[in-house]
Image (cartoon, rainbow, N blue to C red; front, side):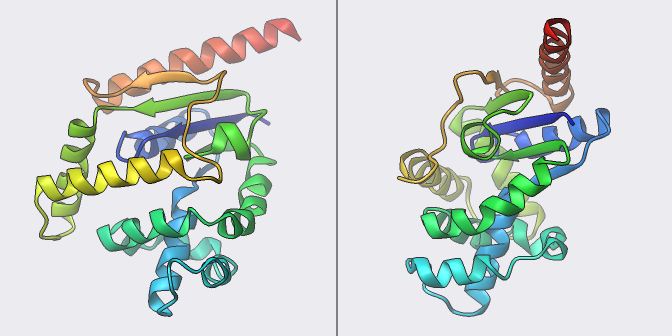
Length: 212
């Protein structure tokens, strides 16, 4: 079964791209960030201490597939909390099997550590990025669409803080895998980003087929 691992920075477009690629290649899709968002929501709903690894791990054990489609997971407060709970090794360990079991059946997975930790042997690895300013613009538009009252400056500050946390956490930091292909979406529409990704994926899969 084909496994495509997509990592990248927050609001770089990797989630939208992953969905389109999954549909194009007729593969299942898992937004692994939603696992951490679901964990965060459970923690918030139960007034757990987000700095307490044990309480956050308890929340992670309560995550079910049915919770992943809840629109509230896309909200700003849940997203900010998800970034905090995801730094705990105990939380990441609780969610590890969920992700690997999904990948064992083939699919497109997007997140922060798919190509480096979850699926190091993925058939194709992509790393999606864009400038902080462009990502802040996209996230601000998204949040305003949800009715949240927040300024672009606040979004950029939150995004910068999140980048710092994701890239410098001790457990599974965000980084580009050695064999990943970088796609910068700063000046790309989703259609052009999709076309670029398909070219990479088709080339990599064709090369693997030739070798075998």
